[in-house]
Length: 242
Image 1 (tube, one colour):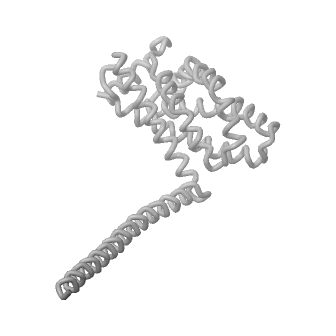
Image 2: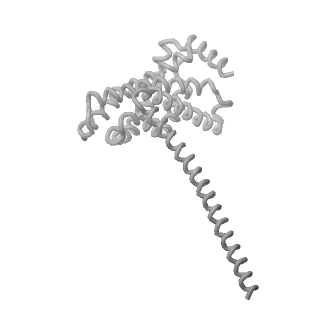
């Protein structure tokens, strides 16, 4: 009888210890899980704060310019990699990518103020308003920023006004024709559903493939007669890229 009581006490003590140990482990696991959830929650909160700040009216211009700069660079890098693969160029040119990034800054500024002006003078999202915005965007903004693109790169490449104008006449129509095949539908989505402060972000995501095409058109061989000014410009560009 004594031995039975003793064994019973040992079993009970072991059971109590096991229950206590599992409770302690569970509490520790719960604390660890809680800490992990707290870290994730803190990270999400910081991302929300960054998002709210970046797309606020105070910083929206800088955000839009940064997005345009980045994706213009990415578009040129992709195009150069394709040209290297096809043996169209011998080496990657970082100067060319920097120039394309700078043109992205100019285009980003133009589009930022253009969208704000459209929403100011054509508020609303009715079909009639959206149609007007699309037509104005294609007839006014597209020629404006394509011209700004070539002028910006012409300045960076140290071309004179005549050379820039001749290049615009030779190449700009290709970009404008591509605009009409891509952007009317894309801009319908943009003007009908996308809030103003996300429009350039949307534009740049959609136009990454267009940016690749833009870089290809810009840096395709020119068929214009070689003038003295053009010859000196080519020499300068070769020296910069070397």
